[in-house]
Amino acid sequence: MSKKRVVRIGIVGCGGIANGKHLPTLSKFDEVELVAFCDLVEERAEAARAQYGTADSKVYVDYRQLLADPSIEVVHVLTPNISHSEIAIAAMEAGKHVMSEKPMAKTAAMARAMVEAARRTGRKLTVGYDNRFRADSQMLYRLCRRGDLGEIYYGRALAVRRRMVPTWGVFLDEDKQGGGPLIDIGTHALDLTLWLMDNYRPKMVVGTTYHKLSSQANAANAWGSWDPAKFTVEDSAMGFVVMEDGASVAIESSWALNTRLVDEAKAVLCGTKAGADMLDGLHVNGEDLSQLYVKNVDLPKSKEGWGPTLEMRTWLDSIIHDTELVVKPEQALVVSEIIEGLYQSAKTGQPYLFESKKVG
Image (cartoon, rainbow, N blue to C red; front, side, top):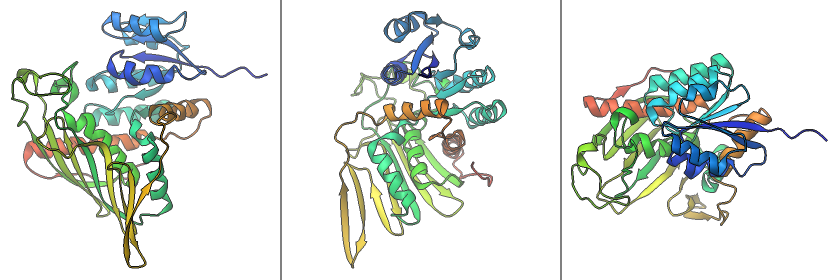
């Protein structure tokens, strides 16, 4: 009997996304050993090790010490946006495969450096865009690739919250995060929409950011009132992307907005043969025999096996069986470039133009 293939994983950043997604999901897989935990707050790393670690797992406060362990094959980078690039590049240069949480990096230049490092080192690099792995996303992707929608020339990327401002950690710190809802949750919606459209060649963007509700004290909020003095990022951001082939994408993102129309990490697509949306389920609309129709697509009732579970399964398969990555770093880089372009447009009041390029 052949020996079971084991993937030894080190975790850098043991905060909310580690404990809410990565650690409980990775712990489901028999072929995974969580052998190292690193966090600037040592107690957080200790707590993660106690719950998820192996008997000989280690705790670090300096990620460089974790990377020095040659037995660690994979590193998950789950830190604030500003440090994704630095840690991921160092990990790949140390011979590790890397999953970085979204967004890929704080800036497009940092994200580009990560792609270059992956190519230089030959290590696998992916980004935690887990909404691609939902049941509705997987079904719609298959419909799009089969051609059911025809040429998809317009999309809407939706990440709209009414009052759900994350008040913990560094979410409100522009220096460490690079922005607010656009780079935090808008990035999920934009990634999902571009992936479904299979269009990664932006020509120009126009963006607006707002700081309208962030100055309110004692505001209603799902996670408690925010401190206006610490709210240095936008509370909402909107934008419009024009692709080289003429297709376009509208993006709406907010943490705080006076609206009843809320939805997060959802896409609406319009094609020459049909349209589709993820609003309150998955729907396909079109025309047949001179009649308009809307089809409601039945999806699995259970979420087990989808989302982060499928994301981690395909990530592990890419390492164990050398299969193709689902979230390619070149795709995640385009998402970062568009988001940065939207922020630049909002800052200057002018459209932001991209250089023509091919995405691998």
